[in-house]
Length: 213
Ligand SMILES: [Zn+2]
Image (cartoon, rainbow, N blue to C red; front, side, top):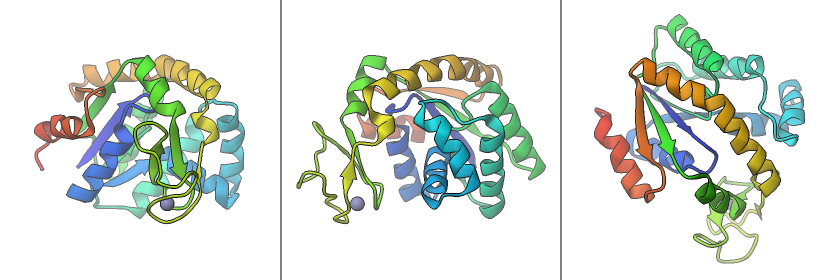
């Protein structure tokens, strides 16, 4: 099974991905995570991508499509959640093509709908463990000891792409690029709208009700 999660940064799709990975053995294609690991490994691709991300800009399609191809080749036969990709109609069409080459297709696309004001609040307070990826929030889920991960003891940081000016830019980009992508998937009857402002438990139920797992 292949499903796509579409939602602005902070809409809760990352939390849901972790739930579905744990409970239903999905694996996640997160271009954000793949890009960050490419950057910390210092690959050519990572260096190219970093320049775009530092400026709060989206990484170009050709770089993204190459990452996705490699990931699918390495993970044949597994159920995949696509998170943060595709963002544009052109990426959606590329993905369809890449999947078709491997005799695969998208089963469902979930759109996490949520008010931008809630998003900004969620994101500027977000902190992430640089070691294990555990996510904290200064108001709703602080780490017990400041700047230290409860799970692994690693250091907890405010990522540069979670700062307010970068977030505002990312949300504007999201609107511009993803609006047409949502309409594209609606026209193919794959789109399911989810209320992203609800609790993680209720969001999980909404998705679970649609999928035959
Ligand atoms: Zn940690």
